[in-house]
Amino acid sequence: MTTFISFIIVLGVLIFIHELGHFVVAKLSGVGVEKFSLGFGPKLLSVKRGETEYRISILPLGGYVKMVGESPDEEVSESDFKRSFTHRPVGNRAAIVAAGPLMNLVLAAVLLPVIFMIGIKVPAYLERPAEVGFVAPGENAEKAGIKKGDIIESIDDKKIKNWEELLSKLSLNPGKSVVLEVVRGEKEIRIDFVTATSADTGGSIVGMYPPMKPVIGEVSKGYPAREAGLKPEDVILSVNGVPITHWAELEAIVHKDGLKKSFLIKRDDKELTIDVTPRYNKDMKVYLVGITRKDEQVFRRYGFFDAIGKGLGLAVEMTGRLFVVIKGLILGQYSLKTLGGPLMIAQVAGKAAETGLTDFLSLVAFLSLQLGIINLFPIPVLDGGHLLFFGIESISGKPLSEKFMGVAQQIGIALLIALMVFVTYNDIFRLFG
Image 1 (cartoon, rainbow, N blue to C red):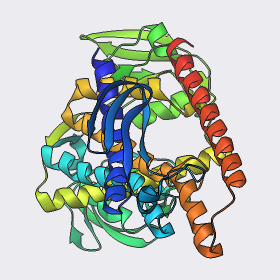
Image 2: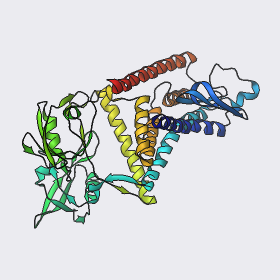
Image 3: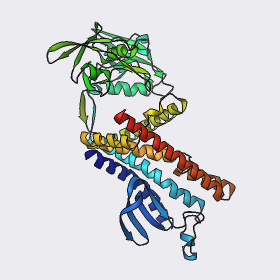
Image 4: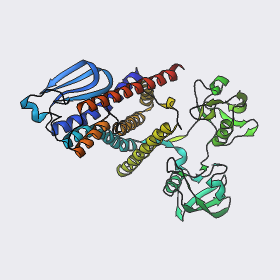
């Protein structure tokens, strides 16, 4: 029940905000609005105020605002001619259409700072001194001479207090050389360090990690770890006789191949040996056993201005990640099986609601941001497709033919239906496959 209610609330908020954008700008532009509907199909509830019927319809996977004269072939009375959408200047029509996705972007931009003001859980290591717990072989940190146990105290003679400041300052200098002041034992040394730039994200790759204890947080259903008997809170002592002191060491061994691995673990003051054979994941192109690290977290609230900066920064980061994923899907770097639909959203919404308010609001903000951006893509049937047609109209001085518009809309609808069928299949496969 929690999952269903959470799903309805999430979709309801996203759809309402989107359609409210269209509705408000249409009214301000003098365009008549006949219907404002949350959902498609037969109506469940409705009330009429003035000329507009406000309704909730049976299918909750969208909504619409029906305006006077919305279709070019729609008959409009002489008295309604000036209030007709089709007969408004192209700039007015574009503003009405763009208002929907822009409202979704505004919702995300408002919610994200609010989330930081309410308070979020962050990894505990961010607040600890920048002690190096693991150095990735062959990456920049190892090449520079950084070693496990080093404590980084300054960057270019500017003191840092913790891992958060270290990562923040290094991320601002991708591909640049900086000088790190490092405490190693009783010595203080200076190290020239160059951050690498990821071609995918533009972020800084440093090749060093904070201490991360090899303690299991979750064991995924349907993976070898659960089948073999590994459990949450198990402490991994060694794999195939190789001592494990950091989670990254464990990942390096597990991801390497599909040969059977002998895990020596500590559980309730007892040591146990459990054999696990990693399984190849085609989507991620890596061997996995199905465990995640137990991440120690702390609760942190931010002030008004810090929250705005954090929220907008996260919005930019999420937008970048979205385009990285889209690029990966187009180039075949990511499997289409990773796409999710309504069932996946319902599952995530239910879990977020059970976890807490900030997680739930984070999901709403994330989906609203995605909805706003994707709706602006120049694809027929999406708002971006209409904006493209309006752009062509403004350049050519005349609207596109009704025949062309009709065919384009039919193609867009067919693509949208195909996508919905595909992602729903993915959802069902995840549940029962």
